[in-house]
Image 1 (cartoon, helix red, strand yellow):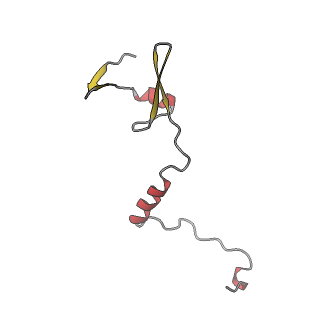
Image 2 (cartoon, one colour):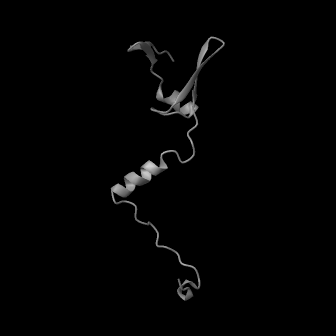
Image 3 (tube, helix red, strand yellow):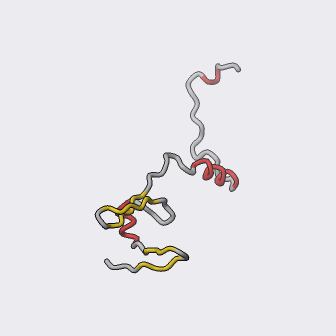
Length: 84
């Protein structure tokens, strides 16, 4: 598949077709590492940290009031006998 380099400010950009992004496990907006190996440009997606962005998502969900439990809470046998 052919693509053209395009001027983007003082740099150049390359349009990467969606199937190629999917094949390397990347998506629009993801961070990637660029290297040159044997005269070829290599694009490697950077691994996202586990649970990256979860706190921001939880805050956003709570702000919209959409953070109620989906399942009722499950008690343990004998909970009614506990005193605090």
